[in-house]
Length: 253
Image (cartoon, helix red, strand yellow):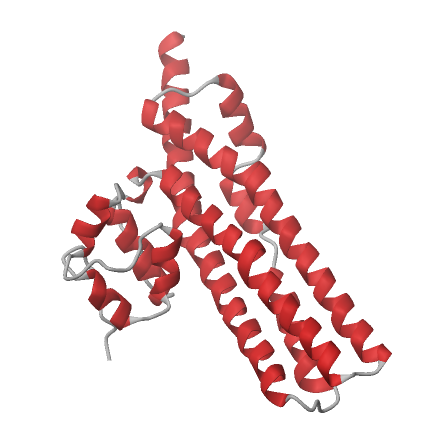
């Protein structure tokens, strides 16, 4: 059965009914509920958002095999970076603290022996630190580079410094060494599923696992969006800038 594709003419309410997890996408774009029967195009217009880019994000979110538009390099990089930053904030300020609180509650209520408590707490602490470091690297190094390339592309001007930077380390280098923070999360789930002794409050334990599974899926979707949208956008812009730079140097000779 073919998956239904999202278009700008679709009603925003129908988008939510299509896949309720798209509520997270709306939130990261700053879109609030209460849009009535307005279309995606109309709602995006009210929020000064690029509707074409919103549709690309939504389609990529619900279909991992979705192929983005051929003119992807013209999409606004700032909007993409803002979306990813909002996603980072959700992880660090909401989801991870929520899971941490649930784990602390389970440790307190279930009276696990010290060894199991230490294993669980230490593993979660290591995972939390790795995720934080991964996000910090993107915020401090990758996103500024993305915005710098995008600005040069749209202005049609490339400096010697940026050209040198692109040749030393470009967006494909980042993609090839992308951290696998999802694997550590998988290991954490396995500790709870396989190795913790039975606990009295099994519902609490199940809730923790469900939240971990949800976070894992969200992280996978997040990484997929980076690989399918951000990396191709900047890679094509880098290519155009390389061509521009070489043309300009040939004209100067």
